[in-house]
Image 1: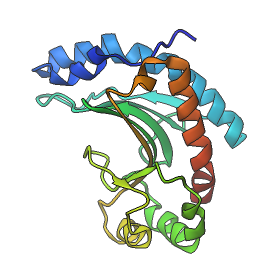
Image 2 (image 1 turned 90 degrees about the horizontal axis):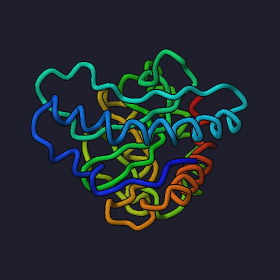
Image 3 (image 1 turned 90 degrees about the vertical axis):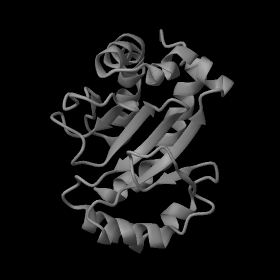
Image 4 (image 1 turned 120 degrees about the horizontal axis):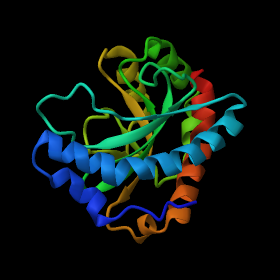
Length: 203
């Protein structure tokens, strides 16, 4: 594995002014790293799932004015796209890396998935305390799984059209773990394995 971790330069990408300049930096600094770790993670998830999983790297193709605040790779069971499917993500904002199992608003069967989750709340009780929850993939903020009202969050995910549900880990940009490629990939694999029962429940 060539991946040696993430550097300050990777996070500083999001301080670059202008869409074109920032997109060039994303393409040159971050995408090659996503390609390196993405294939490893896709193979791992394919083994866990017992079927082929596919790597998608964010292109930000719809952007014409505003530069992206974050970038990511996504892994889903669909070759053509990931947003309408439960998917796994690894990505960067300017101050942290996020590792998610993501259920975003474009899911056509969001309501059914939320109902399954609400009927199996005990599955969420098995998630370790260092995990976090986000209810909007566009925002940097997350809440500790220890503190969040899981039932209320899942009811909102069920009832509000634009509501989302993401569960996983954050790693702050100054965490030494990020400079160790092998340790970081190991953390991501551990995170995905922990979340896999929830992924299976959503199918």
